[in-house]
Length: 129
Image 1 (cartoon, rainbow, N blue to C red):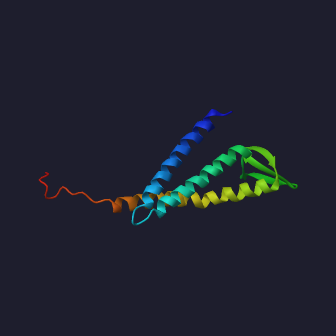
Image 2: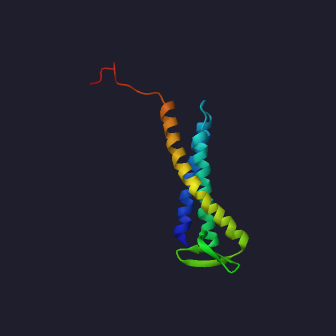
Image 3: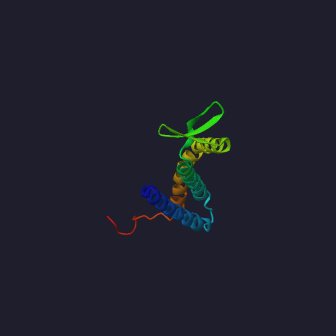
């Protein structure tokens, strides 16, 4: 068993739990927590991709098809899989091209939304230098 993968998975699940708490606490706000939810979904999608990458032994984006055989790749090492696993891996890999940038964008938007909802403090008129 690869303990690095186990610890990375535990750390990621803890981070994902923190995102879930942030989403549910943001959902109680009047403006809602749409962007927090998008970040949560994108992070969950990446985690599933990472988990399946490890379980299958690679991704179809790094693999190939040859003579009716389907291979997933991982750093130049190919592993034969069933066609359904190959196509699922391919579509999930391509979906990362959309969800990863969307997750980053949503994280920045959620941060702006949180900053706008907090009352701004000002030292003006309080005797501060």
